Image (cartoon, rainbow, N blue to C red; front, side):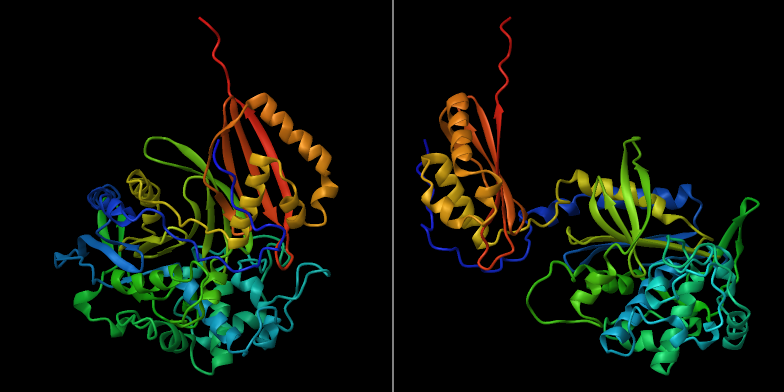
Length: 510
């Protein structure tokens, strides 16, 4: 039998915060890179089969643009190829920049998310709500796609270039509601166009200038712009529609008062800087802040705020799984059976399609742009992520235990091995021995040892969070799973101890 675990005696275990979650496999980056040839072939094939004139894609790993490629043509008539520096319009992927600008103003205490929008948009003071018990619209409703406005794709796309005066006339005329505010998710370009108008009102400069100054420039996104005239013609991916078995040039929509919902032009390298910043918000940790907003604010954007739907995803080999989709602030939030927690957004306009997907706990992000009307490049992402998973390198960071959890695990393991109870009693929260008294816990342990035999080995601590974990003790005729949770006391004490015996199945004699 192993020697008894070391304990802290009867003294309370002092509390220290654990190290941030860490990657366990030092070869994970090299493993992920083995998927690059498959990713390259996959995106090239997708571009050809989907009849997309030009496509560019990139992958970010651990704070770097690890690979970027481009296929096809940015200008069909001139036979000009797409490069990784070609500028595409990213459509609704613009929304998270608008959300970040709102949060930047919030952090500067120039507005609050629960402020009524009519405070900044006086035209809405006379807005007629759908019911007498409807709550007043707030900035938070707009950010989370829950103002109750009707879904407005593709109507919103065609409003990009309207003048501010026309926008004002619309607001004074009112907005019809599909739902009462705050009841359900419904995608609203109108809401994000209004957020742009709020930025302009609060900042005293246009939302385009504010986002350029406070987000693009701090991130070094020098090729990113709202203004098409600032992109050299030889770098622009022209917009196309596929119709009647041929490509037709699509007029590029202008940048106007409604363009906050979809107006940004950028490149793969520039957008990767934004992805890197969002990913760098994880894990929470000490250290200097760098970027347009605090790490905590960037993490806030990437949290589920409004549930959308339970979706079913599938891979090329017809494997299916479920994903719960929600909306954060300008970002879609995925809780996925296959890949865990993900952050994403797509974009589609006449002439363009785009998508990006982040795995914050894995340090990985993918992005793709296309110059075809509503080019659904997001359809390529499940298989692309599957290629990364097949390498064995797509693993999340492992949560590290608080030193107090390790110490309490040693105390519990010592009790399991020796039956000595003094240290266990000393570290117990006031509920532990009321929930199940010491006499019954002693009897439980004796039964396990009688039925399953002596200890053979003790497994590693598996950490659920820094104050909760489990491990498995192998015995002669089975195993014992031990689960502990610490209480919110300072110092932490042991509030839950569950032992689950698992007898080993014995094969029937032949």
